[in-house]
Length: 87
Image (tube, rainbow, N blue to C red):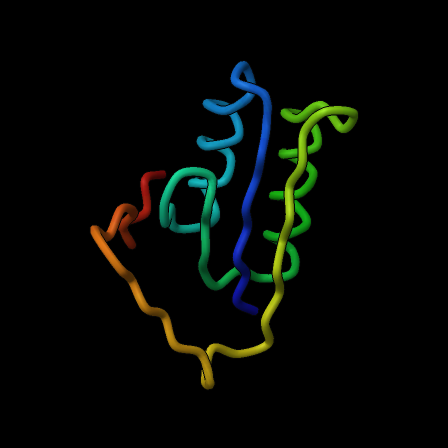
């Protein structure tokens, strides 16, 4: 499946959330990630994020798509992220 993940976390959790997400998805821009991911890896990602975030103050939103066949991505301005895997 293809997912887009966005988060809004407290400053003290940003670095940990970033590292966790980059293990599974491509960084697109500040607090935004995307990529193909298996159901098992998505479950792992969510479990790891639950250990990093404060559920009373932080937010993570995951948009799931079965396919990207009908999608179109437009970028206005500079392209921030990349498709390289860090880990």
